[in-house]
Amino acid sequence: MSAAAWAQTFPAKPVRLIVGFAAGGGTDTLARVISKKLVERWPHALVVENRPGADGSIATELVAKAPPDGYTLVMVSNAFTITPFQRKLGYDPVKDLSPVTQVAYIPNLLLVHPSLPVKSVKQLIALARQRPGELSFGSSGTGTSPYLAMELFKSMTGINMVHVPYKGSNPAVIDLIGGHIQLMFGAISTTIAHVKAGKIRALAVSSPRRWPAVPELPTVAESGLPGFEAATWYGVLAPAATPPEIVARLHGDMAGALNAPDVKSYVAGLGFAPVANKPEEFGQIIRNDMAKWGKLLRAIQSKQR
Image 1 (cartoon, rainbow, N blue to C red):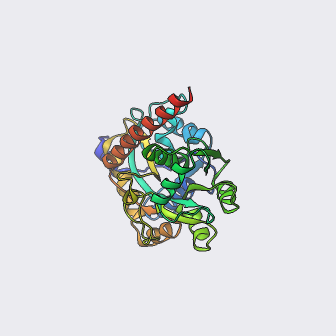
Image 2: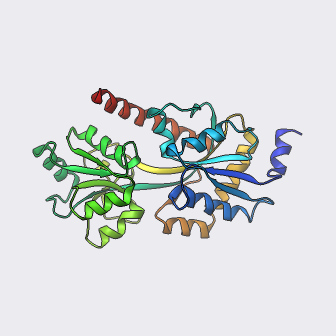
């Protein structure tokens, strides 16, 4: 059977979507949203399997080594572009996997405790320069997206702050509310309620453009750091050498699911922006992020030697 004919009959059996994180997180939630919607389009199920560990690289390696037939996929977060610079992997993130589509995007908010006498990014930078090494920022762990967002912020401003890593974002947010740390980058979906309640102050959003949920907030880029972007994204990958016709079929069906009005509304309610871009566009985002975070992590590692 030709690849084109194969694509027309695909899927002829259930498709596995491996998630490298525990149930209930953003990656898992988005995978299950797509799975439920594809039931309406496919004669067979998209089965979500959780294989957590090593920032998603265990699941990614499983898929990188799976048969390239479209029946084993992986849902990744942007940790996919970060882990290659933190540990030795059993796969090549560029050569061993084929992008299908970026599923969703969510920015971080630059957050400070209300006691900190700043109400803008410029004021924060000025204060940090006046008090080098005195301000502390929290994150959900070294190497995570919020951590790298702040390290990028530090590198672009030349300021010196102390990192306090936590085992997850919630403990960091709790300590920010309690005043035990002074600032952090945090996902808008998990922190906006605290901002609206006045428990913490948001100075800016990390997306390239202002975010619809908080249109009054400027971007970090427009606040004096042009080019700054540090957000979390999610996407689907297939094994390398998966026939282009199959990748196109997967992309088309997943994009249709993500663009369905009920799915768009639901995903937006969770704080995400659905994306559903083309495989080549997603591939370029992966390459750009690997170049950016690789450069930053190498600089951090060289300072620690």
